[in-house]
Length: 227
Ligand code: MN
Image 1 (cartoon, rainbow, N blue to C red):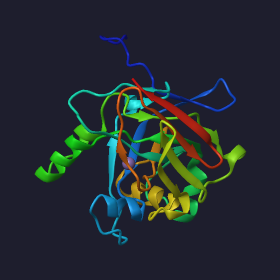
Image 2 (cartoon, rainbow, N blue to C red; image 1 turned 90 degrees about the horizontal axis):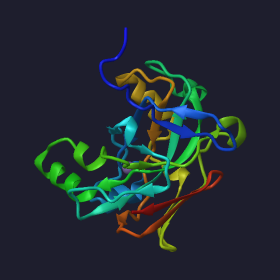
Image 3 (tube, rainbow, N blue to C red; image 1 turned 90 degrees about the vertical axis):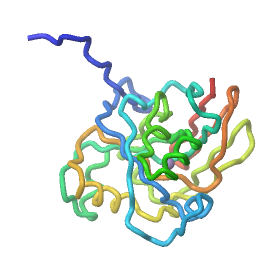
């Protein structure tokens, strides 16, 4: 038996200091997970149930370049801690959740903000604003055994050297084990899943030629050029 079309190229994330790679299965993203970002987007940061959307696995972009996407005049950066799962399941309890983590990376949840805002206003899905080509720049994965688990530490982003976003991982409204537990009530999580854990305040627009530096304490810096 053979495939009738060429098989899709597998999307992989490099592992730091290794020739090995991490194959991506799904990409879950949480919305409004830092209070100051919820406020800047016009929402009440009170702890309401979390909500998630997905990007496509092949939107993951480890190239260091971000091609300015079509059909938008207002593309925003969002620096986020990315959690990579080595195993999964359903109805995972928060106290078992951390056992499923392979490692961590720096990611950018690039957003066509104008399209997202239009869809929000119409009460329609956000997908067109979030899940587009190359929309998830990502740095190499750092295995848990080398960096430990991350629950606090600086998360920041600069554009052309200018500070734009600055926060601390400890400001997450929904913590990593809570996110894993919650997602596993609605989906079967599995090895290869990535979770983008939300962004602190300071999101804004980028333009062709801009260079973004995203930094998370313990994970180094991800440099991405807008092309
Ligand atoms: Mn985001």
